[in-house]
Length: 562
Image (tube, rainbow, N blue to C red; front, side, top):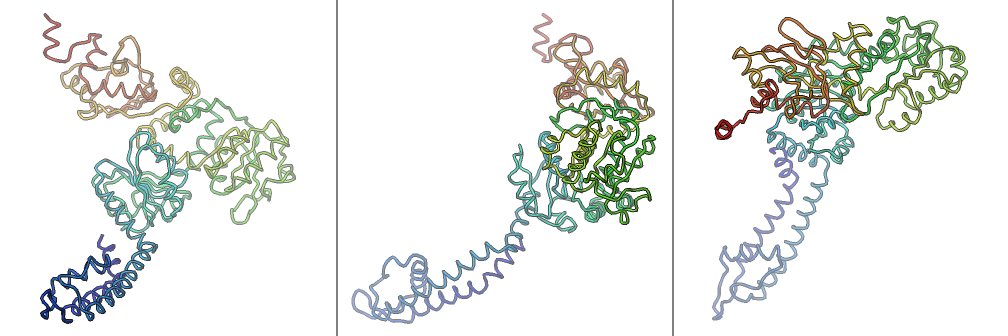
């Protein structure tokens, strides 16, 4: 606010001097010019009447001559006052209008207004730096779950786009540089309600600066940053960044999993899908030789993971020198039929279009399918605005960096145990994955499930904790039972119980719970709400354990007992 006042006074300095000078000269002139009272005696206007007269004359062109009719000299001086005041006011108003339209002043004013809004926030929020595809998805997911967030974005058009987004709650956004510590502080970096910092600017250097600033100014906050290179990721890790997201590595590892455990890949997709997203179908990519178009960061990650699965790839790259592609790489973009024929497109099992250009990727896939209609196609979609054309192309598997990044970060926030579950699940065989698929398929609908964490503690599950400290057992089944009908089980699947000494995948419903246990579950949204009621309400938990619907109030218990 001090900057706004300073800038306003600085720009209005000369207009204010002109106005004050005109008013001062006008008042002095009126007190010096003699007049005549109603008896014909000489009379001079005092300062009070002069200031009063000039005040209403300068803004309203007068209410009359006071307190007595003016002489010719006074009327001549009044004429001067009229024109001088009008000109000075026009000059001052014009300066104000110019100042309001000045981009620098509007930026300072917006910054000050934004900082005040953030200081007044009383709900927990996340600070998101950058507003691209991943951030947009994340903001929508947060809004669906009543999680507040604050956006800092350097591009003005992105902030304007945020302002017109159809979101359930208002999301404050600032057009500013996330590498500036003052900007992050104004956005709430040291606010007591700030829950974490998320760097999704699309630039590794900027994300690194955000991570360093956050860790130095607010070391207690968790920091999540996206990185698209191993060097940047290593640099972020050295400064204590809590989670580093590389969408290329995430997709490559999951895609490679499809070759030895397609059921596990399906589980990954189901439990990490964004809100109300349609669920993917079961797919098994064919083994054999694949063509990989593009050997950048994405292509290198995919090639490395496929090599671990024993899948051979033939590379097509337009710039072999700058990407350090292997010697047997075919030079070209892959959009031309002759390049694909040179890679023996007619005798391969699948093709991966992994360049950083969506138009080229679609052209590669369409041309390849014309040459070999039986191909399994994988396409990299760099921009979310191309959803419609990628769906129309009927690509078997689409890789969207923004969606993958948003899914991963959402999992870290809503279900921190999800990372542990996925790590342990990768070690299981296909038979185990099929059992999990069958359990999830029993409750799954046409849209994605919710995944949530539950900790057995006095604050997160007070009803369960109360039973346990009294020495009574509470089983997993007790909190997975419908609190309205004990004969029904909630539509959810327990995925993991993490205790102090052991981790149990797909625990049995008869397993007993202990203080400090952390549970990971997936299911329908209503199951999460009903389970939250059970672990907080002693009466609901008593019913699910015993089958007796005991009255909760003293009067009702007395009535039923009598």
